[in-house]
Length: 206
Image 1 (cartoon, helix red, strand yellow):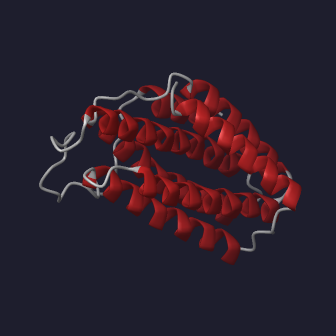
Image 2 (image 1 turned 90 degrees about the vertical axis):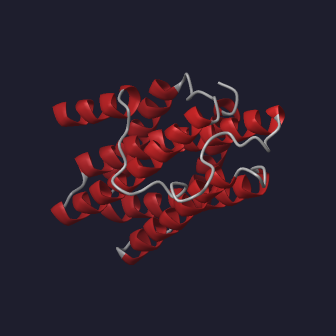
């Protein structure tokens, strides 16, 4: 529990460090490109803020699921996924700064809620916990595809980051299914979509 509290503080208050190179690092332009208009820059920053909130929630959920996992192997699955999601956290936070934006003011609330949901999922059993992971990642992948359509074409840095995130989320979903994740009931999937929609709408502005 002390370690979990430490990771929460690192997620919410520290400057995250990625273990992999930023997908936009090889691009000739990293900052808020001159070709972006002010409305485009604000919209890109808002979309990346939403993505950053998603990564804050991922850290919380996977930490909670690892904490309550019934087997060491399953615990390692969630720890490894959280490590990859930590890269996303660092990349999105860096890009928000480059665009002159800010992270969500409600991140402590998002983290607490996601941690509670992760604990509940883990308590329902390993197959349900993995199924929750798979459904979450599938929904995130669809969400990121929508952001690729909404991001300005000139914002190649943000688009490169989101595309790599989408690829990673798809791999996490596949790994959860292959690990024996159960298909969640339709009402549960609807409830997850509704909660995600509420979070993304709020985080876009706050």
